[in-house]
Length: 432
Image (cartoon, rainbow, N blue to C red; front, top):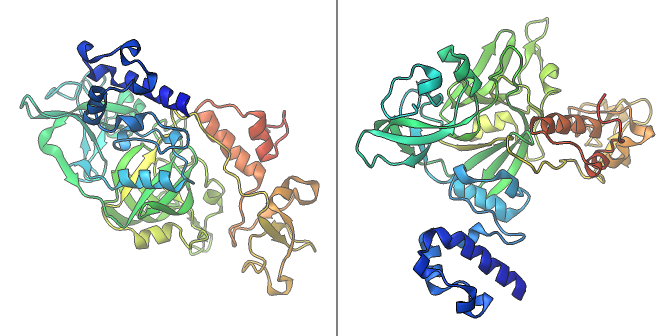
């Protein structure tokens, strides 16, 4: 314990060096005892820089951040109630937005008041009004009418400029008019966190996660290398309803950033013109697949939540955090418990089920047989069974590994032997 206190004291000293003058800096010999390494002056300085003690996070401690903009997602364990509360506290902070139309664009420039063009030389990025949060880095102290802000740039397609398109989802800094800034208090009932690394949406209430949903965020392609869902902090701004893109239709769309919405997984009409066919898109849920919007699962989770629940229960100004995947290093498997009880019809059934009385199975076959668990799916006897969509049976381990490997490739991460073992994947069979 004594050594740990000494290490923390030394770490605090290093943190405080920038705020102490040379005359205030004491040598360890003058202090006489390493445990006294923090002098009264240093402690006072720590208070002035704002909870410096939390910057040295003890093992098992709560990550420290002053706002969304200095969060390190890898430090947060979302299964830890204290970490959930820390995220919630940041979610409840006011958000600064740009006071223009909710689908209008603002183009921060590299110097105050200059022309936007040439784009590459003069413009830092593209932002949207009313719902996209910006972080004010410098106030207008010189009175020129401009402030320096940072945010994540949008796709730039309205500019028809290749450079502007190329900086989609890049964290940018630029100057905007001070008069455009508007502060909004978030709704205090719920908040959302979308984690692009895990392709999950977490529903927060009163400092705790009350549900999680699978999502698909934006995936770039050769023709559209600007489909990435921008990270950042946002608020829900308008209930758009059903959107149509060609033959693809998306219900329950809620706008959070210009043309970017949170909506139900898409569908296409069947040949009868009435049946909604979701299979094409539901098989992609849980990995990047969209054109920048956030697709949310249609199936209800254990808490009865899905995209329709969000549509019905959220209100305007609900805070939405979107954590980026870039720069992340801690991407661990997210698998169901191996002991999770599953069910099947042993007399020719092709699915495995989460519910012994699944509504998708004819009554004469009920109740189903519960003679295996999720961990048994990798064995020969159960390798051909597929998950039932009706009762929300979890995907097979191989499917979850494919999703993990796909996203891991986005951040340059290779599977370790431990990760392969967790998914039940044999070495040398990582890819098909």
